[in-house]
Length: 155
Image (cartoon, rainbow, N blue to C red):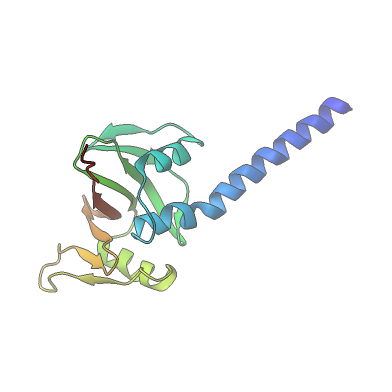
């Protein structure tokens, strides 16, 4: 009897942790992707790694396959800079085109979700938000990310 009760308690606490992470994803990761919060690649790497390790490491980033959504937008992957570049960044790859992604973020995301297309005549032009987030093509899909120069300390 005690073992069954303990099993139920452990299962429920694990489900609660997953649900909590799921509901906090847009706030925790999404605000950084929209450049509304600080970008600390180590923090985001550790946050994403809590559920599973990165699927791969390429293009200067750790890539995590996720089943999360970003302000209601289903995601394919989330990427976090690995320290090999002169930039710190965090972003997400979606199943939408950049045009669709810009519209969905404008409709669902908080302040900072409004993007403007740089060149209206170019169908492959990037979108930029006033805080500095970027939407661009990655293959046929849209990705959104925030990129910042690394802060160099003088000693």
